[in-house]
Image 1 (cartoon, rainbow, N blue to C red):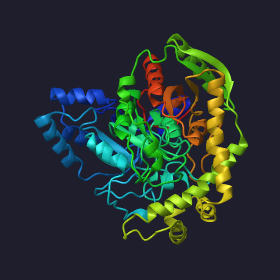
Image 2: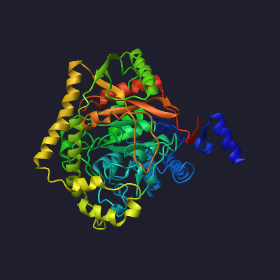
Image 3: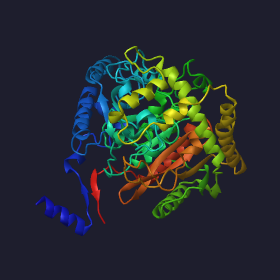
Image 4: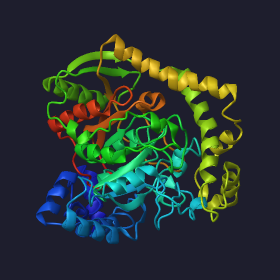
Length: 522
């Protein structure tokens, strides 16, 4: 019977959901606001919600579609939820994040019974002595750290031939829309978990594209904040110049609530001490008319769009016009190869410096205390750590000198500073509030043997290299694969980006939940 069914699928051109039962979940697509309403009415307690999400993870992570999106769950999640329920009953909620379950990418320190592995077996004993300041901020807001998500090992900075979403600890993350499709970027587990309703909200990190790209491929909203708006202390680093954590959520509103709770600073991260003194409640900028009178520059070049993506993008630009946006079309951002090369050099230098500094803070049980040690560990455990791709980025970074090298200082000017000028000049010349462009072409197939081979390039580097904020929002589907567009603006302009992104989202309502399609036939 199964073979006849498969034959009929091939002949008739159907898409096959892996498990219809996986579509039915009590909390499907529930928002932070809806959870707060449910808590207020007594429909749910935080304990109820945590139990439901833990059951969802159990059903989807290693069973059913086998998403491999979560590396570990917090054994104390129910205990934390119970304490927050008791507090709510006595004194009311702390705010909108009170009792909201959050999944963190597993390169973010938490002081609990979960190690911070960055996906590497070398860090399995890395039980942090302190929460990352961002995590402390979340806990203060009442969030429940539910679990840690899988990721591209070392945030995709080990090999140029890596497969996005693969790690030695977590295996290969799978895309909930099409299980054979790529998950993109290093925050693949956070994106897949958010999209598959495995938590209320999730958090990823980005150096270049690792929030924006997985958000686009997995059909969720990704907010990449200005570098420094969220403290990076306690997050396994790649590059001080470009690293940031960011929300990955099913809606812009949820991203706004989460970002407000994530904002954090501390002296150990000097860049975070330069953020605006006045804290913004980003939920105040969830405006249905948020596109009205905003001057938006549309960039189509140098991005090479899939033939169907251009039509979807054009349709959505017209929707923005209908919402009152002032569109300045056919602008071009300089795609300077020199900037890309300089960025690469900056990342190689900074990775060695900041990773060694991070490893020095890990508990003594972590035996790999330097990048040199990690290279040796991977060589000694190649069957587990390097079955598909190697560590040429590690080796290249190890060969770099200190941050006082003139080559590094020059590269910093030619990447970060140069990219800021590219964006600033385009916005000033056209009196723009922001820029919009496609986030990515639809996902390519997952390939652990040959690595990632996306088509058309990406647009994340403009915001990533400059350190400026961006928001990726779903805008449609190509053969069931989600596609998104990105809003980009200058430093600390998250509030106006949220206004535009929310207005766009409410006008389009493009996202639909994934169907866990195992194969796609035509």
